[in-house]
Image (cartoon, rainbow, N blue to C red; front, side):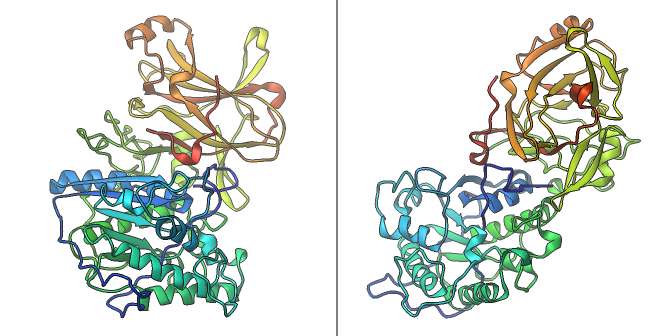
Length: 520
């Protein structure tokens, strides 16, 4: 299961943007506003792209956006360099990215200096060819109009949104050499809104699509809302992660569509291409999950030459248990999901009987089965229950990654030792000489907790006659080759309900995980 805000530091709210419209009349600009900016010349060979988002955007980004662009660039010999950042940050501005906040930062406080440490368009425009921006889904919690519209009001009303969008359109047109791509507004699930608010939200997005968006300028939309609602009022339950965030399956489905829409805009097809990205720029073959790969975690993505982040295939569904696991190549971009409990076919080859996928608060998560695990006598530390993941045929390459993040929850206070194990021969016996790197987890009783491990700050352990194996591997100061994850707890906790989810390796620390890094 992916990105559940009650456990991520990303924060709860996310994505809106606006609904697209093909060739519609523009809302009259405020007096003195610049005329429509001519659309910039297409730049098919290279582009600098910035994606501003919070947690819904993070879900889609992790659905395979960096890997898609790496594959596209390799296949088409382009240099579309895409980066992402949280905007605005949680501090000092606050985790608010609604129409008022974009207006406040980019229009009211425009200029060459940051506003409360957030970049204005005067700062961003010289650095990027395309800026993509969106809102958190509470933007769909729209109150009735008051009859007194106010551009400087942070109240979520259609009358205020329209004024703020008119001002933002005029502001973006001041930078005719820069393209802007705006997401249509993320919807709420039915249980987190009411029909009247949902209808008001839909009416605003329809206005954005049919009136605010204009042909012939430098502003375009991606119809994210249309994809997640399929024309209805609410985020479809099948696409939700237990709240109004999109689940991983949906995020992986729409990430390529987002990428195609970006390419269409960059290459001058923003007014003629599909507003959803369906039927847009083709998805490179190397960015498609290979057929028949259904078990075990996908191999980490592969890496490209600098200055771009390494070329990477998005995490593909792993190979059937009878086949050798794909050999990971050095390098990777973004993140690699080790397990998130979203693919039941993966569990047997990855866990065997050591874990099961269960439901918690409407989401699929991993229950580590200590009760059925073998018991080991650890001398002074007492008897322990030990759970391993199953090793691949060849070790996974962790060199591109610096962090391992996961969510965890238990029904009691307990300690769980998590170890990243390296076997010289992962296809050989489990008791062969080995070495490992360890962290100590303390889940909160009854609450989901997010923890991130810095792979460079784990505790080294050489097991059995593993000193030779460690030296032969070059005496690495951190885990480079992963054979297994091992979870250990004292036998007194054998009956504990211990849940984990979204075990993901990250190349860089996302803003959403800052403050969760476990100190040694």
